[in-house]
Length: 391
Image (cartoon, rainbow, N blue to C red; front, top):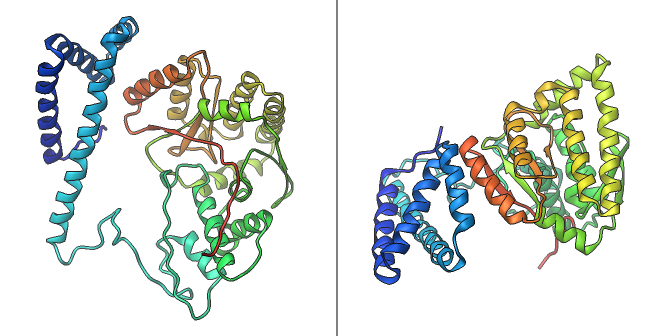
């Protein structure tokens, strides 16, 4: 179901759009206005599911001369600016209306959505943060934590592990305790498994603590051997350009998927063979990156997906398969389900081809038509892991 904007916000956007149209006619002429309107109308129909209109739009944009395309691009860019202004105005209007209800709880997403607790009696609102504070209490002190992330919670990108690692690093720094990447990862993992009783791997905590590109070998769970891969700066730039994450529009709880998979592994048979395939895919991915071969890296990602599905059918959902097919249709080199998999969460896409930007744009349009709630999120490789300093 497509999200419906509030009527007041729709009215503001429509008004600003009409004013932009009038300005466009006066400044650029009727022909440019008609061109913009045709692109807008075709885009709307294409997003609604019309393959014919999508094909027409593609041909129109491909054949449009640069001198005509430039004012069209500027018009849409300006419309997005105006839409942002309308949204900011609507937030203020909504906030004022909210404040007129004195007994209302804190507004979701507002600065007032904060809470206090004693470490001995955590309320369970943000359990991983509360567990970290309880693990390293600063005796006789009042602590204020401000936690935020550009990635939606439950996106299967290791957000909870990253938050745990960051909070632990900050608390240890405040207390004057040294912290290695291994210490931070091990403590964060222990919080999830021992304090909170959740099923958890170790790779998310290791990735957050170490940063960079690493090859992780689980030698004796939860102990792991971490090897930093010395990839070239050129390959790092290519990965930044070609990698993206697709958030599927709703969160998932990885611990539940872990429990399902573990129960299947206890019976032996096919799931055990799937583990061997996952291991081979990991080594293939490592070797591909070391060789700077992204085509081979993409194949390793695809092999990983098939091994995930063999591990348990619930790991690779139908919606994930649909997104993978969309990626393949625009020439992506590979894709994989992030984290534990299952419904919701996210996928990683490795785009390819001569024009990665065009492939991304085509994929984004098809994604919006197929799964309106999903969104494409650019990502960049972190040069370093968790760090904390006292100022």
